[in-house]
Image (cartoon, rainbow, N blue to C red; front, side, top):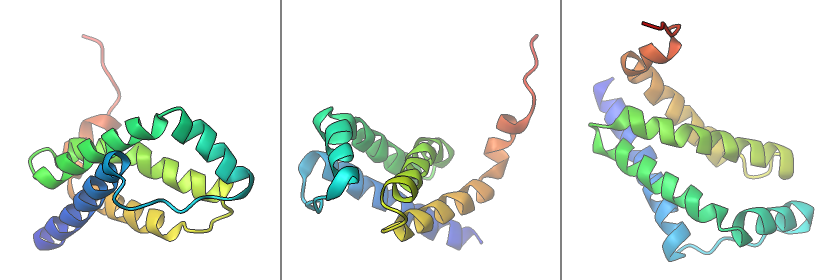
Length: 129
């Protein structure tokens, strides 16, 4: 199980480091989206520079996940990004291209399960002292 966690952690972290760096260095050109979803995405995400912030979060989350020492914190950074990827594909593309998001989400869920002791406090009621 430990070896599987290291492999999944490395693959997930490396993928987000690469995709996060791509937001800044543009070494993998993004295919243009057509129609209303493409227009919406271009105006709301690219023109507003929102994707630069997303890329920074992807890079930071990927590096933290890769580190092994701060993997739970990296998973917290990557969780909302993965939810956004899934929602985008379901709502704006009708499910086209969703498989990468599903695979990465399953990897994230697996790692959350592996590191569940680190997330235990998130599921306990807060107490005021």
